[in-house]
Image: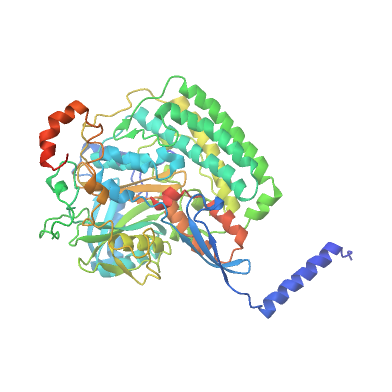
Length: 390
Length: 249
């Protein structure tokens, strides 16, 4: 026999009371809660209208479109080189990564291939933008749960990465650096050595975050088992990137369908997590940041020399045809479906952005969760508004 | 990571094929994708009305409008393409506005006269097509390292009242994509639980991504990048006569 503590007694009473509530089915008046469009927890202008029963969500509907810029229409009246300026602004935290699939799709239509050095530097900058993007996520996830400190660390360490991107491209957020057939410029002198030290800083940041957040009881309590997405549902909604891998889907465009980048030549690992909850999504992204630093180290070591631009005509006309090329962007699979009719401009550009699919699962996943978990789940799904609205 | 990662076709497509790709353009074959196409044709029968294989790159299959939902069902439940990439629509009509930087049609102002599509004046893309609008979607078989593949499905839509069966009963994620296609192209998805605006304000009239919907910014501004610099005062004097004709002071 064990003695019954006061705490256990109270728990028992609370459980009985909860049962009673369920059994009597107290009539609670439904309530509609509007979150956003401007709200610190919505990462921009996403609005969520949730119908509540007490603390539980019966139905939630995300309302997007506050930032729709119509890039698919605009792309039809821009020449191919001009379009990179537009698509830079889709996922603004990892801008360079937006340019790459578009350029690769155009290159596929033109049957042009960038020289090896350009491919390596593309991959390098691609992973740099992944860092710039995901570091902020790692800090931001804490903020959503009330831990403000990690965000400051994240902004501090992301700056090192952005500085490196700026030194190459001239822009912190909108590099506009990728060209059909190669890159605008080569790397500046001394850049590779500095990048190595930045990678060390980023790895330290990962350790720091791991200690700060994943060691914290509140963090695990509020993320473990919250917002579970089963494998099958994830695929139906087209979840990609870390969101899919956190649901145990072993799939990474970088490994399984790599076009025009040098991932097959690098030694890295695709991390998956079987749980599919908010914690898993955070954990997978944390590992991805570490893998990215490893990849960047390998690229800086093995960077081949040579030209950075293939021979392309000065005025770019893309031959008629269709191409869909996707890459593994920080937020997930991002692809461009380009239809060309041989003009200076594309005939149709369908932008398949990761966040659009990732967020379309919210009505499904928010059903039945408690109000504070809405914030955690949205934060862990991780989206950029420009990537939903395009 | 080194094993056939550059292809998204089921197995076999080794590096030898890639080399052949570049050497002999005409005789190149993509057996993996041909096998995949055969699977689709077996399952769908006559519903497959067109197909296109770009060896080593991609596969396009066009199905009849009636078989659109069935094709998704078979792709997902029988062939294993469980991953829903995206769904959208193409308007194949040549744009009456701003088709290209230097084309004549650019100068046409919206609202001059109703634009009518010249008979047989447009051509469709891979896997063919007979109508102005086509719905297309991307599915993929994933979660199977080394043997992933993707396919683009297409179907023709009626010119006057474009409509097709909704995919939402097969892929729940098609919901938002169909809402977007509905508002941007005016395509009706039969069986969709609630076609309402995704991006545009309620009550917006017109379907912005249709080719005959004018992009107003394009009408009032010169081609971006063509005129980057303002005219210097001295240039203005020289340019004055031609400007005067335009009625500007």
